[in-house]
Length: 326
Image 1: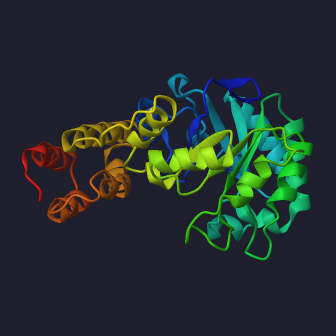
Image 2 (image 1 turned 90 degrees about the vertical axis):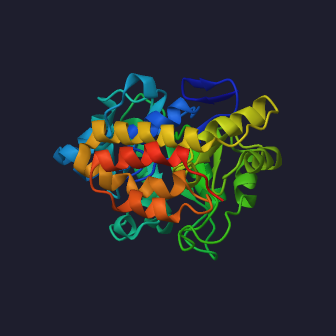
């Protein structure tokens, strides 16, 4: 059993990672239907929450059926993160997560996200302030270190735990790697097996199949598995992993008809969340993944990516299951 604060999971939780412009209401709805045990909002700026920016406030709305769910905050100022944590708590999440790992230039350039791996003292001060400002469990997501020469996660994990962080998620890359190369779980395993560590350690990076999930869990004995990019257009991954881990059953891949129906629901949820015009644009990020690897599909993928009306998309989705691809 894994326990984060008062949140208990009977089995090792399979968790949806917070992803900017991805893990809004619609995508979470789809992933929850396919077995995600814990989910997070898209990350939100502490400064934006304090200023009451409408876009950020919408991101932290939590539907009851998405629980357990956390709000992820980023910032580089102790006072602003503390205030944002108080504001986020008013939306009654199940936990607050601190983003100490995003490698994106727009965050790092402002001293946020993975930039704090270069200033561990500030990271720890931010974590301590957040923990003291809320009764909710506060967790942290980070990386192995800033670059190959500065993989300081063993020390960072201990210090975050000592400041009251309730669980830590570690992505098996440095910031300088971005998302290139393979994730290295060796140090994640060392953090988990550190006798000083008693909080849950969640592993993240390159879990793209049920077999890979089982391998990482059995080799490194982490307390949770976090799935990020591999879930885009592939929400079945959550149920596939859980079936393989806990029932020793390898599920068959979804049929083309199943992919079309889930894609259709995803589009409808996105329209509900963002309106038709924005939804049609946002969903273009998803179509490639929903229909990835289908021989002869290129023509229809291009149509999905260039269609500018809901009806055009619906017509295409109705057509696709009737076609033969080879």
